[in-house]
Image (cartoon, rainbow, N blue to C red; front, top):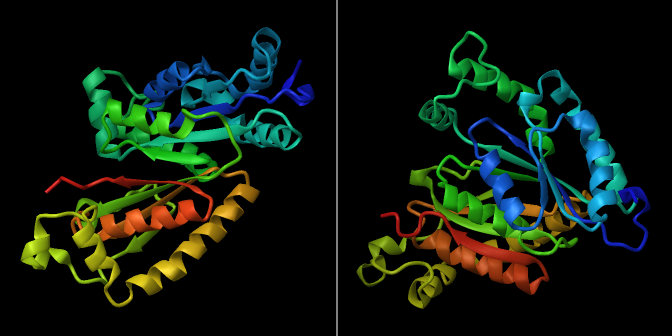
Amino acid sequence: MSDLTAGLIDPGELVLVTGMTGAGRSTAAKELEDLGYFVVDNLPPSLLPDVVRLVDESHGPSQKMAVVVDVRSGSFFAGLRTHLAQRREVAAAGGRRTTLLFLDAADDVLVRRQEAVRRPHPLQALGRLLDGLHRERRVLADLRGDADLVIDTTTLNVHQLTERVAEAFGTPATTSLKVTVISFGFKYGIPVDADFVADMRFLPNPHWIPELRDNTGRDDDVASFVKSQPGAAEFLDAYVPVLTGVGAGYLRESKRFMRVAIGCTGGKHRSVAMTEEIASRLRAAGLEAKPVHRDLGRE
C-alpha cells in the first residue's frame, strides 16, 4: 500500500534530512533512528518514491521514515526540490507528512570539524576545503529557504544536537505548531536559526540593581521588576498576538516549527523573564510553546 492510498491509516512522517557537510546530518539521523524512524542515508532524490513505496509495503504506511539527502548524490541532488514539492502534494492528499530538516553551521566551525576527521569535502575537488563549503552553500541556498526546521549547530555539541532533534521529533506526529522561545544575549550573537528576533534592551537592566544582579529572569523578583517596567506590558500585549497570527499562517502553509528569539545584553535577566512570559502566553493561547535559555549561566 502506498502512502497515496493509505486510507484511514495514519501515515507516518517522512523527514528529509539535508544541510551542510559537517553540520551534524549523521548525528540527526542516528537520533531519528533511536526515535523509531526507518532511516536511509545518502539516497539519490530520484529513488525517494521507490523507497517510500518499499517501506509502505514492508513496514506499513504508519512507519515513520527519515531520509538523508545531500550533495554526495552528485548530479542526482539537483532534483531534490522537485521531489520535495511532489511529497508535499502527496501530504496534502492525505499521505505522509513531509518535513525538511536542514542542518547548518558557520564556515569556520565546519572547516574545523572536517579537518578533525581528516576528510575532504565532496565538492572540494582540487581546491581548498573552504572552496567546497562555498560551493555547497550555493547549491543548498534554495533548500535552506524551503526548510521546515533549520538547526544551527555552530555552538552545539553532539548531545545538544541530539536533544534538539528529540525535542522536534520525539513526540507523535501532530498537526500542531511547536514554538521554541529562546532567550539570548546580544553579546554572544543572535541565534541565526530564529524566525523572529525581539530586543528587550529598551527595558531597564536589573544588572544595575544590586539586590537583583545575582538573580535571573526566572526568579520572581527579577521577573516582576522586568514586567512592571514602562513598555513591557504594551510589548507583550502587542507581540504575542502577532506570533499567534503568524503561527496560524505557518500551519496553513504546513510549517510546524517556529523559533522566536528574545534578546538582552547578556541573556540573564530581561530576555529570560520575557521569554518565560511569552511562552506562557502562547501556551494560554493554545500553542505548544517551550522556553529555552541559551546563554543563562554563561557569565
